[in-house]
Length: 507
Ligand SMILES: [Zn+2]
Ligand SMILES: [Zn+2]
Image (cartoon, rainbow, N blue to C red):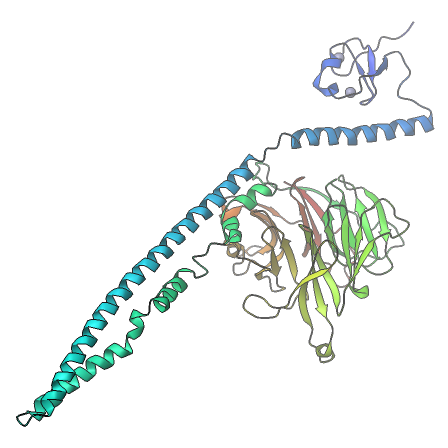
């Protein structure tokens, strides 16, 4: 006599097994949301399932994993295909319309200026000509009078002085009649940089950049602590020193362990997946379109990894830095920005110069930035920087916690940056995503213990979310806006041998 099997959801008589959930289903179950996207193929409820044979069981688990990934792709793409570029188009339309209006106004102003100046100069010419004519006639008369006996020399001398003043004044002010010159001056006043609204300026002033970037929304649940990662993956390892981190599109968390010369990969759920052993200590990491790029200061080299699954051989492509060591890396919009410490004659005397090197997608050096906008060089020893490709802007956080901005080109619209950079709120890390600032900073409260907080802030402080940092000394940070993941690593003090120093948050 066979025992009657019940379904998991309703407790009704089971008809079949769901091959994905490994659950018994009744007739109703098959139309339930839970099994909506499950395989259409099922097996009868009476079948012995799950499979007990070891090899087959493993294979079934593998199939379930592939099924999960494919489901994710299907669901993600269906949400992507619902995206509509209307907002971007509206923004572009506004930019070009505003720009057009401004250009038209400027053209009208310029044309009017030319006409007005021409009128003024012609009037001046008439007046100057009349004056000159009068002087010419009068002087002729006076010269004749001078030859006569009855002349009153004192009176004529006085008149001569008046006419001289008049003639001298006119000759000095002749440029008031010079039309070309006067028009030149007026146009120069009109075409000053503030009046020539460049396309870039119009873009920065618009909300276009914000509409392109994945939007960060303030959520009711705020920033939630998820877990702390165990970064020591092997007993024989040294205490890891995590100097860089990033979150990939797949949710994979990648850590740079410079103490063990290793690039470590952790799954979204926090379990260790694999590691890429390197021949020199890596330092920093950035996400690229196809993988990651990693800096190696001692080799003066940047490596690009696309195949993160192959742990055996290092198939990375490389850029060699000339004349200096590379430390921080940031990537975006096809550009690689590297913070470099230059070596040279100055280095012999203890002077170290820092600079940003910008490379294009073919690895060609396109720009070197050695000074900030005030002309000062910067010390990036313990500094931290973030690169915003759309604004073509580097945000630099000095080791004293003061944020500086460097515009590679163009102006900035980050007026709210100053809000975080207030006395005693020393920042340790700072990321910019669209109009959202993501920072880690100390928060000093009178009569209360200092604490470090993770701080998300919308444009102009329209909204903000804060969460106390679980660790001690906040260091490298990475944020994936799409999956709402923030990873913050602790900077270890000397003789500190903890290995659980990487904290994961979601928002
Ligand atoms: Zn059921
Ligand atoms: Zn199912």
